[in-house]
Length: 233
Image 1 (cartoon, rainbow, N blue to C red):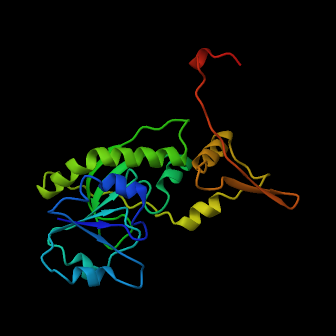
Image 2: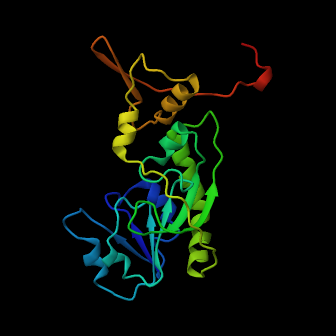
């Protein structure tokens, strides 16, 4: 079994947390793709040619056929969205903005972004108090809980493959473009709240708008009323 640990994030706490049960196993080799031009994935794989399965954690690039073909069974990706929703970048953001189901998925990869046959997935509940950041945290937590069981199921071929409709792919530029608004643009209040909470993350600026030559950004926190439907205003 080979685990491919994602690129630039050797010390990324998200992936380290998810992989912590595997990083010290004797039967698992964690390959770290260093800086892009120093050591290619193909060069690392050329050291051995007896691969059966590969596992990725939301790997950020498309693997070429000559890499995919080195694996007898295939390469499996764990993606933080409920495929086919949330293909590509920023699935947490788009799940809120587009009011789409959210979850985590396990699928074989092909030469498309988050394509290939679906192996396993789990839906994650969300509500008005969620932000893009909270959905990301939920996905990481759930993946940590299921990844060991899912990997065992994949190794034992204990699954039924499913094909899914390949909905549109999201790119980072799409999220950045959507995060800049005009003050007089037409949105429902629901759309407005969804956009802002989707971008209300501690490590990013919020939704950006300009007025009289000045630029601002806005975030929000939604809390449920303490007495629910009976709360007084």
